Length: 72
Image (tube, rainbow, N blue to C red; front, side, top):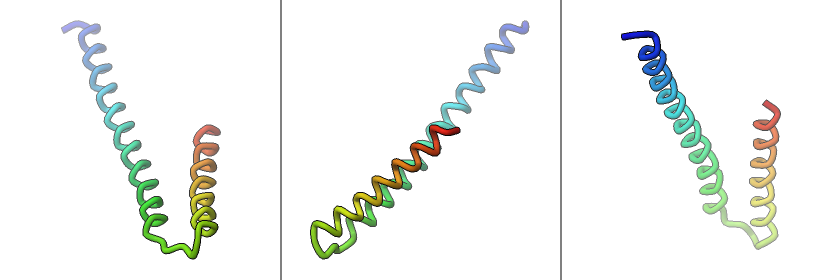
């Protein structure tokens, strides 16, 4: 086995681990936001205005998170 084969094998393994980590992170993010939406769904708002307010809060949280991620 020469260096190219070892490098190729290493790169394949690294890519596999990287893709697994990205997938795990994506699952975690989707689960978090789904949990937040489920809480919103289970609420019994007094009217449309309070529901809209809660939806706006959730949207603002998502916007803030995106800004934080873009900074890094």
